[in-house]
Image (cartoon, rainbow, N blue to C red):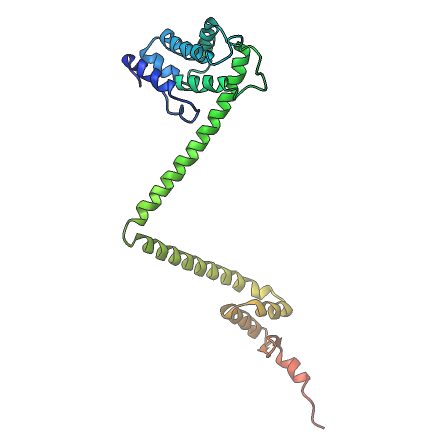
Length: 239
């Protein structure tokens, strides 16, 4: 947190700030007021605002008194913003960044308040981009650290493969368990239909159930079950 003797340093750093993104890490007005009086902080803010007014046409400029009034408003309503914010905002105002074609309108307190809200929207977007960039950078650094450890990536890949295989085997055991519970409730037709879709273990369960029912299923070349009794009924009779 800035100390009293550092207020001039903070002011100089704020005057170098040109964008909302650059102002994200600057000390806030409230932080400055902890070791400096609010009057000192407001005076610095007013000087920044008044300095930016020199970039406007003389007929449009806000008076020094109004700059001070606006500075007090910022200190009261937006203590978590900074001198750097005020400077970036002021420079943006002078470049017509926030106005809606108000090129010849006089700069007054209501107009400055409207432009300030637009600046805060811009700063919120800048903060969101900074968060995403920081997270991406940290993830990249973590990946690089992991990759730098000899053999670790191979170990991770092997572990992932083993986990995938074990999961598949566990799911298959669960599926076969469900099938084992269901086969006794299937009709003969359902047994035949289900057999076509099953792997070797599933077919063995279905064939075991068919055997209990005396169906003695046989698999034809076309992959269908045929009962012995039906097969015998289609054999030609002697005589």
